[in-house]
Image 1 (cartoon, rainbow over the protein chains, first blue to last red):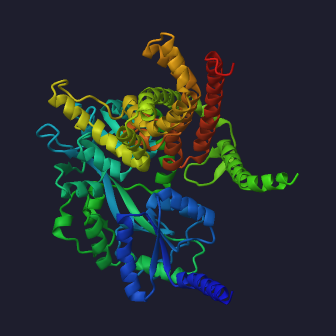
Image 2 (image 1 turned 90 degrees about the horizontal axis):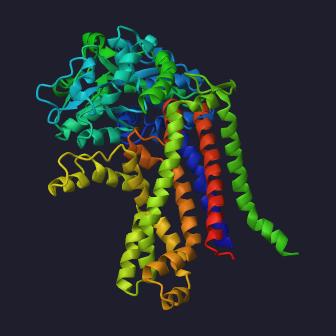
Length: 341
Length: 285
């Protein structure tokens, strides 16, 4: 009996000790896989500078958002890494703390597109753009404009994401001399694209599979996936159409109700440090947000890696997060109902 | 008298789980009548608009496709599984029985995603099936098997077969072979014995298997998602697209309610038909 009590006391002590330990850690909510490893670059530097450990909780974009909504003022994480337009939903629902930009020492060195308002800040960017297999498309095939996706060579060979049709809708609105807000002007053009679409992909994995096995030799693809496939030896070309490529921004925000506000601010500041930015961009093959970041020549020459204001101005299509988050559900509903059957 | 408290005590966990499940269903039901506000996680007031939207072609076809695919899958699974289950029960060779058990049950140990990815490798334009048919000179150009209803049904049939085989094997093993011997002694051919004696006696297993696979297939998600590639949509895929991509949880809830009601309706119809079939085969006389 005595042994049992000792064991129970030890177990109680062990369990009651764990919350105290987690109190000393900064908890970061992030996607799994490579994205977590990318966040760990920031975490490593953060621990080096502050001595505070970083713990990562992973999940998909929406389940993390839902968890944050359920937890509300008692958040599971202190910092959230998400896409900037999803970040808008966090802030719109009161789930993000207002950033103290005076504490972000690197803020003034950022490209303007990194400024995502008062509640989140962009850390890196990527593009969605047309990519094609050079071995499976006719010789001399190029995509100089989004309109080339409507060419006969692409018929029955194109795929695009089913979870986010914004890229093709923005492109169609631009080709129709309209703005994304007046996207309905591009509907006739979009409907003409239906015969070209062979499949819709649901994730980065299925996107890469479709392209790699040649099912869809033309894809509207995430640049990071395209570089990865090219690195694996898949003969592919990623093009920046003359109208520009649609930019996505990975952003950081601080969860409302965090008890480690200062540490969270510091984590974000470190993420914007030029040296950390360089490591993140080398790792993900994405564009930095800090102008002072040194980008290797190999990375800088890749299409969709923006390292100058000029490139941001001429090659990038960046939508305000509020517009994006309000229009995306409408685009998605229209796209599902009119393009996917 | 003393058994009653024990009975309720044993039943309590099930009651708790059922209550939680009903609460979740009630929450989905109330969400299905709420207005969607783009750009917000909050929902608006009461509306019928979500249900009015169901008659749009894509949702209507998703419902029809769900039932059609479920029926085809159940039918083909039954046809493919019966001979295997029959051989499994009736063979006198132990090695063959072991082989059949391994072949029938092993797929259960691999997940749905793994099996679906394997089918993607087989069904693709440059997949094994097309490559084989081309090398044998049967076809010149690749068959389109991916992103078609046929491709989805093929993968679902393979996915459902282990369960169907288990159910059918149980039913076949309960058949008293004396009836078959008696029929044969009275001059019935082996085919006639099979169709007029064995099949009717295994009808409860056939019906149970058909209904289980049908109900199971109605909620299929990963297989139609990956093999269908967005070109073949079942109700679960539409729920995912509207809820998790467009964040339109009210409409996703509406589609879920429609799926649930239609599944119950379909199962009630199947139950009525199966009762008639069972009566027709005079098993209850």
